[in-house]
Length: 327
Length: 263
Image (cartoon, rainbow over all chains, first blue to last red; front, side, top):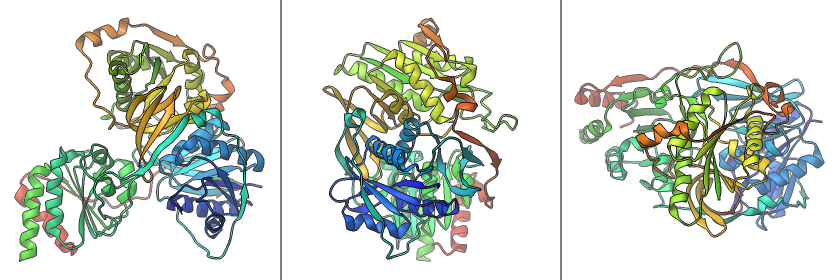
């Protein structure tokens, strides 16, 4: 028996897409090593029977449901620890995101298990699962093999594809967990607060994205001017660093804790291209990057890269595109 | 209160990183520096001390690594730590994330800190998880990627960006908190602090001294084996333009976009 366990994050009555992808991945891989995939959910009364059983459509056999606080990692570690103690699951898979990292790492400590993060592929090798992870700025792939009773796999965001087969219900099992004292030392005050204006970047065909290289909040005027010149279905997006700095609204953020986009054109201005950003935009059809640092990682996955000062290039590019449109 | 700050020596960002083919581990030779993310953790400790809402009696920099890691501790002390603790032992080499977190937790246990601070990631390993591992071994609550930190009675009030927006979390001491780089602007050390750093107390401890179970660390104690390195699927290299003449550059960009019907 080699079963897989997946933690499924939810918010306001909806499951997280990356968690659902992890169930599909877990179910497919578990089948190859003679096991099944179960899911764990932790939360309040919004985790109804009707909602939880739909996890079967993504491949879950059972759903272990525990009442507990949401949005914090350690209560989930307590629940997973209990479910694995009882059920003997061999692998735990997380769909990425901030909580997946925290829970996976906490579980590794709790059960003395091996953990691999930023995993982009899982495959069966004999009766074991191995995980592949890009390292050194995605220039190499490293393969993880696990020893011991449990292997923990934390996926990179969007790594696992979601497969639905409507009509299959999962069995719901309620579990009672005694939360560890240190899990109860943290308490959520407010969750999911939106900061700044509500903007739609997911539907845009053309995105002009700005990073630290814009220099200051006012630098976004250049990005907005360029997006306006493109006209039509274009918008401005931002990196996490500048959103955290308060330069641009949270709703416009691309990347690991933000949105995933795949527009026809992604024009990155002053963005270095850290992995956490790359995972949110790498499937864009055309990527153009402007950065003054010739060694910026973004040039490694751009279709067109311009090494230069965006303060000189963006205004002229904006004018040239306006002229082209008018002509 | 006592604050321990976990720091790490990493290869300088300008040095190209590679895997040593004979050991299968990252080649960490070459120019080294204090992990830039850790400077934000030290700064956060300093701001707690200077903020006056809580009495910070001591800030201790803690690292695990070979002899050369002492330089990261000197840097940490020059940025404000009062003394440092260096966990170093041959048997720890090759430890994976879980084993490293266990070893660090054992070293921290002796200090019994009220707060452990660290940077959100190391510049070389690209992991974001060591804080969560350390915390569970210490039986302390943990929160990562924190961008705002305030004292609130017997607790910290913390903010961070998570999956659905910004979360505010109240965490009672003792706790392990990893901070994001948006939390502060680290100060530059004064010349006096740099010169004085080597005179501050530095305690070395080995695995036995920290009470580490050797079956849980090193290559053999690690539960993950990494290897079989290979190249990712090749992606066609993009075109690069060096902007020597902006008018010409812009012309080229417009032609490129026009060819793909993007204007």
